[in-house]
Length: 248
Image (cartoon, rainbow, N blue to C red; front, side):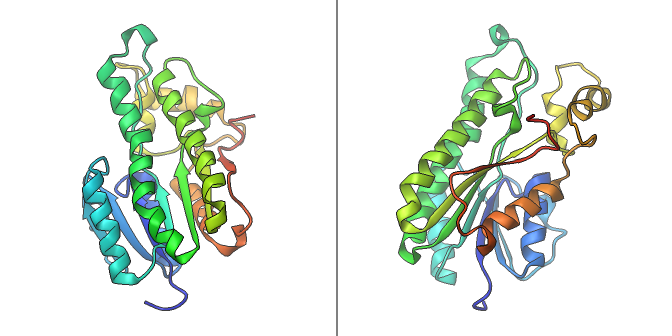
């Protein structure tokens, strides 16, 4: 690796946003370590600087072992992008099961604790790092029927802010991105069961964005690049809305 290259770990790497983030980081010449249950969508990215691990990031020991391996290989871990997340179908609270609640909290919140806990010791050694959590504008501009998802993303933002003040003395910056409705496969999963997904996208989600279009994965990838870069060297504990005005 060269002096200019950063080593960036990305979770949820096989999703639409994760993949766009990886492609942008590779374009910038960085080394990317991709974590997801399935990295099949990444096989079309043929790049020597991409290393993929199929892993359940809720398995703490496995995640820690991967981070140790990455640090041993490259001598540094510069960035962590927590892009992993699952959606909730619009459901009245009285119909939400404990299994559904626990799944949302595990994937959208517990995974952040596990990955950050594993990587922070290495960032502390180098006295530098950037951690980014991809949350959701729904945490501040809620929609009916998504109460469990919204709670998980609110927790994700609060966890990130707490880390920002805790890790500032180690020169580790920690920030949140709130995407608005995004043009990914995940968006259709927010529709009520049995609803017409394409119609819901247009009549509900697109109409809710003042700028008049869905957020593209590349929009999020650009925001991630900024927060990872030295241009954001004094940005920590902030929440960047990439939502086309949805949060207004």
